[in-house]
Amino acid sequence: MDEDSHIFFDSKQREIKIFQEPHGLIVKNNNLEIGCFEFDTNDDNHDCLIHMQLDSNFQRSGIGTKVLSFAEELYCDFLVIDHLSTEGAALLNKFSSVRKFNHEICVYNGY
Image (cartoon, rainbow, N blue to C red; front, side, top):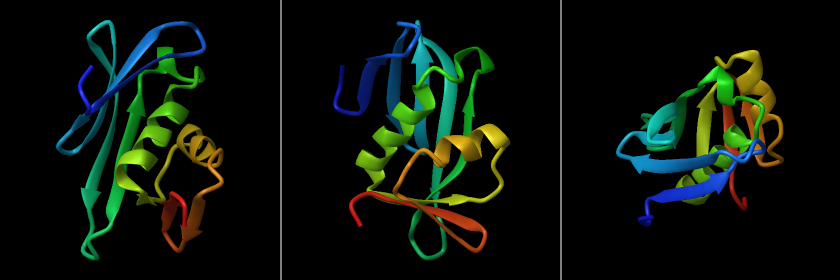
C-alpha cells in the first residue's frame, strides 16, 4: 500500500481500497472501481467535494463514512455543494464537523 491509499474492510468483510488521485478519491474492490469522490478548488481557494458516487451494491456498509473520514485527513476542511441525493445528505449528517452555509456544506476537521 502506498501513502496515497487506505485499505479497510467494510461491514460485509469486503476489502476496500481508497486511492488518492489528482482530482479526488477513487474507491475499489477487487481492483474494480466502485466509487469516486471528486474534489475541486473554488474561487476562494477552498477544496470542494463536487461529486460523490458509490455503487449501490456497496452502499450502507460503512464505505462512504470511511471515505469521508479519509478525506478529512487529506483535505483538513472542505466544502460540499448542496445538491446531494438523500443518501449523500444522510451520509454527511453523520459528521459532527459538518456546517451548512447558504448553498454550501462545510466539513471542518479540528476547527
